[in-house]
Length: 339
Ligand code: HPA
Ligand code: ZN
Figure 1 (cartoon, rainbow, N blue to C red):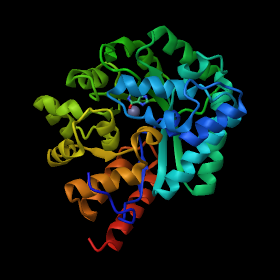
Figure 2 (cartoon, rainbow, N blue to C red):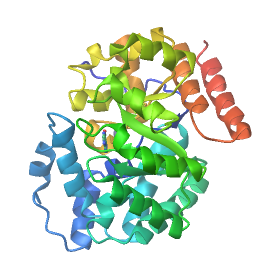
Figure 3 (cartoon, protein in one colour):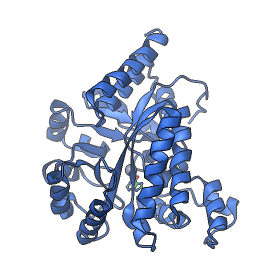
Figure 4 (cartoon, helix red, strand yellow):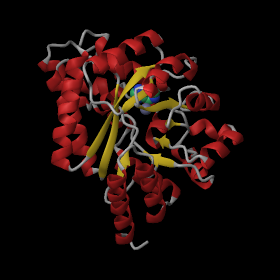
């Protein structure tokens, strides 16, 4: 891929597909390991960086969960979240709906209360400092039993955790949405929003399952929808949001190369697609880097980038007034680009 000029303009947007643990940059891994007295399996920085050449989702998740072990205290989670918001604000993010993985921490003996306390405090403080509105989603690990997801939901309720909704992530193949129908029904009855990863490595049928069985309001990734024309027609007609993460798809070999990414085809079919960074510390960039990459690869102009950004605003769960404000910022950006 040719280098992307760092100065190319990218639009203000809402970031809707972001794993907080996936913003853990190598320097912070090393710093927190040191602070918390944790011996890393790969303590040498260069050797650690060499492990970022992933072959698939599973090979990435192994390192992602390994690095996550350095996060122990509320202060660690606040530092992680604050660093993301600072970088996101530089990327033009005006609204961020971020996920975290409660089970990845509880399983290591970290109290869920400490995780929520640190993340929530940083969202509030960083949001104020950078003018970013935020939402928080607790994602269930689909390769763990549904009983664990129920226990996490119980604990989040007991903590009165300030969550916008629930999500579903981790290893997809072999773990269909149907396994989590009950816990998503509980979340829905509680008035929580629902998002789910589907159609990243898994088949288009998992997207159908996420919609029909989980009542997901937004699909994370969803790129394999194109294998099912009836599903594409439904997604387009209902304007179901698909939070696409181009650099992630390349780095996890969900697509062979960026040139083969289905984003232009998805846009051409009228799908409600947004651009997001997924796990920016692992996949080579934040949301602005993703915008620059697709703009360069597919010769997208300001009008198309603004369309993607307006899709992100439309697909967020913000109140109508904030939505109008965000859309106004995107329209102003487009006008300033002369389009
Ligand atoms: N896919 C599925 N699960 C995840 C991801 C991802 O890209 N990142 C963190 N958990
Ligand atoms: Zn993801």
